Length: 115
Length: 115
Image (tube, rainbow over all chains, first blue to last red; front, side, top):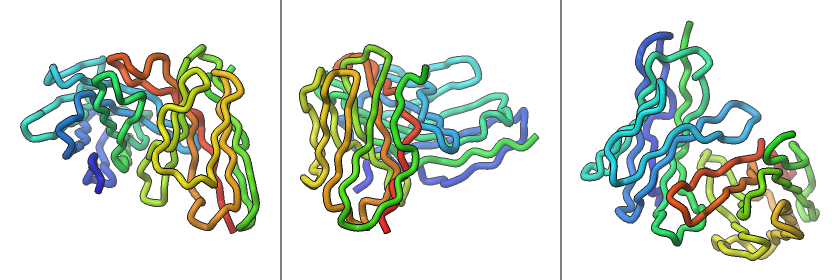
């Protein structure tokens, strides 16, 4: 039973346009959400996060939106650049002080940004 | 000066063998983890250690034994390897697993292939 799902295995976008990556979760105890980016032959690297007390967090070209009622979050990248081509993982935790770094990951979405 | 380094990067071995994967972090973090990326690409936590003490053991077979000689190192020993153990294993570390940010820093992974 996968508690975090990324239903789009891949996404292809033109350079300069917006990339929207989606993530759904089922566990209502999750209260902290993260996006990681992964290049081939490298480990995931942290990109951006959001606490459940917010509905939006922005960092440069990256914005994460959280819709708690729908148990849905999305990552917007604008404008998209070829260097953004990577696998993007959504992750969640029930941070309330007891998760001890246990993140539940989605299966990732491969983003390809074409020049 | 890699932050989280794990060796080897690739490991090919026969069923029934015993093998180890080493991990070291130079970030001064107190907590280290092993995550497994299975064939469906989900990253799942196996173990976490805080200051050399086991915190999380996610129902991993006891053929897998983590060892933390100090808080900068977390090694993974696997006995009697099985075909199903083939996966990518990621080591990670974090500063404060109970804090509001569950930001993990990952190593580049060890691709284990059991033949």
